[in-house]
Length: 79
Image (tube, rainbow, N blue to C red; front, side, top):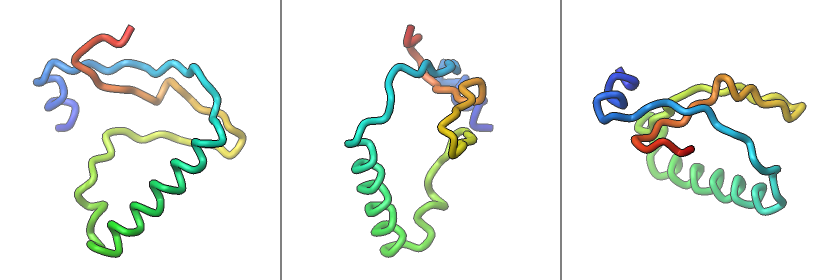
């Protein structure tokens, strides 16, 4: 159903291309996001029932990422 809606809006899937490593600031941004998410959950326990996760991804603690399973949807070709 999600894919059908995206295609109706003329969106197409694109594989990601990794171009940079994580920086020290990335950890800070993740922590800020987690703090924000905890505040939202404290305000509304059902908060994440209203969040749309459009795809699944597997992350490994070795730092490997299978980009075959990662897609972005856009109505404009990013390449």
